[in-house]
Amino acid sequence: MNASTLDLSPKTLARVGGALYVFIIVAGVFGELFVRDALIVSGNAAATAANVAAHEGLWRLGIAGDLLMHVADLPLLVILYVLMRPVNRDLALLVVLFDAVQSAVLVVSKMNLLTPLFALGNASYLKAFTPEQLQALSYLSMRMDSNGFGFGLIFFGCGCLVLGYLIRRAGYLPWILGALIQLAGACYLVNSFALILAPALAAALFPAIMLVPFVAETSLALWLLVKGVDVPRWNARVAEMRA
Image 1 (spheres, rainbow, N blue to C red):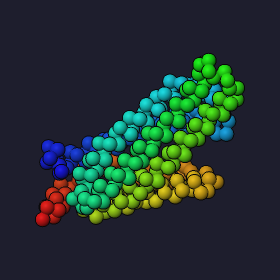
Image 2 (tube, one colour):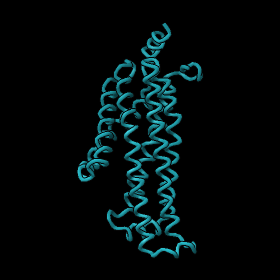
Image 3 (cartoon, one colour):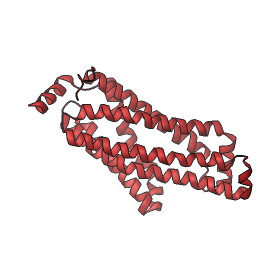
Image 4 (spheres, rainbow, N blue to C red):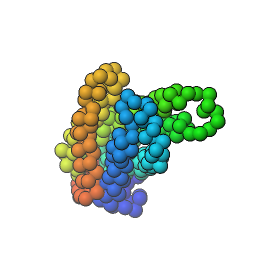
């Protein structure tokens, strides 16, 4: 499959991919900074439960935004595969597989965020638990989501390493973007494995270690959206692939 198969030029595909990527970044930032960071009080289950109960609509909006973000992941993966396939078909497919696993892990993890809505409700069966138990359960589910996010980023980090390599080799996207994406992948892997192996180190590194991935992914998204790809060089790569 190539761009002509989709009846879209590679530049148009790149710009659609860039728009999807920008949406993914905005939705991710909204969910993390304006929903969870705003409502979760670190180490305080009671205060966190009170915040979620008082802002249930915002909490639900954050979950919905996260799910839409992962829906957008799928067409973006197809576009990245089409754009990167002329460099190396097998590695482009590997990026899709890594990132698809990441999306699946994160979607499943988001189910943890529904637990506070059930636990803090008024259903009669909840009377079997004390308020403190329900608050603790809600807070635990949020911690589970946070760790699930870290697990998913292991696969995404691996995908970034491969995608960055393809971008550096492509010739129709700036070399520096590939280097930044690979550096982002390394940051994701360090952060996620620190979360598993050395939580204190992960706490010390976060959120500073996420600055590089934010800059790298935003730069790639905006480049795709505004500039697209160098079409003559992309066509030359396609010709080499077919030769």
